[in-house]
Amino acid sequence: MNTKKITDEKDLQTAFSIRQKVFIEEQKVPEEEEYDEFDTLDAACDHILVYYNDQPVGTGRLRIVDGYGKLERICILIEFRKFGLGKVIIQRLEEIAVEKGLTKSKLNAQSYAEGFYEKLGYRREGEEFMDCGIPHILMKKQFN
Image (cartoon, rainbow, N blue to C red; front, side):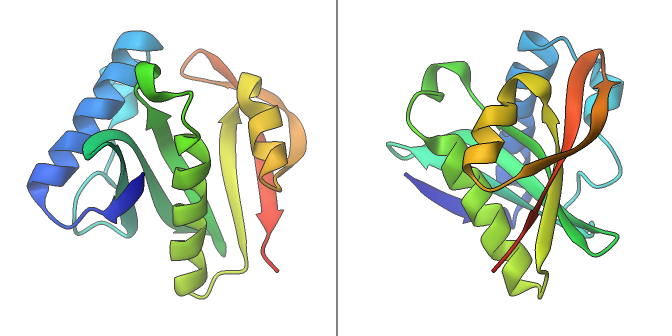
């Protein structure tokens, strides 16, 4: 298991392919809602890939929003979800946030994953809301 910061168009397309399979095909998120202006190499965010046996199987990105490192578009191909890769993605995105001088992070978690994020130090804020037809909750974490 290792991660890689995306620095070229080929790797960015690999991340998009993973997001296509997870969010659009599996979770039925409309394609026009999945991709946005931050899905470029020159955007104000960092994209990563996570590998299992040298195969890219997950992705995520980090943006700076209102002083927070905002973790977004975190996903892993379904057949690789049992190997602890979600934690690897979160930890790497948090490392990037710290490298950028940030002291806190936030994310909009799909509600079913609240317990997963709680184990990683995130705390729920506010009420559940719908995003792309999927229940979500805002979660935040302060770094030490």
